[in-house]
Image 1 (cartoon, rainbow, N blue to C red):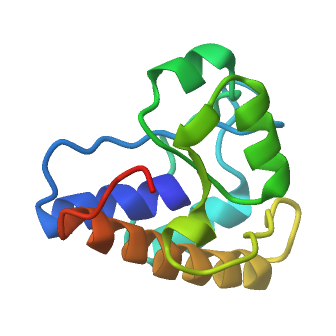
Image 2: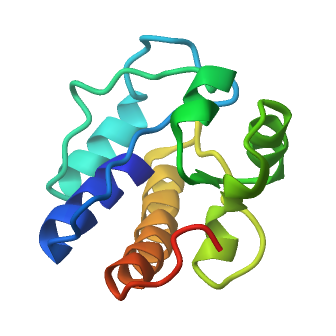
Length: 137
């Protein structure tokens, strides 16, 4: 969901030189987005039908300029894979604290709440990037 939100923010904001992708610490390569995520994203006018999950690996981390993690476990895993200083909690990069709970297996209400939280956080990060803010701190 965060990737779809970020792609829209990049397009709507005319942000150049930024590409996004997603990878999960416990994801299974090639799996479709969950039904709840697809429904909530579609209701917001975005699309996840073609999305396929990717596992977070050391090669993914090696190619990333910035890794925004949803919670402390994801951050720990990204650091373990060599992410170093380019790893940040999404909340931290947005000027907040805490983490974002994974809605996997939750109801559509849980997915909607997570989508709204991600929309706010990703929007703040993209606004910071668009304003020329440091993309890594």
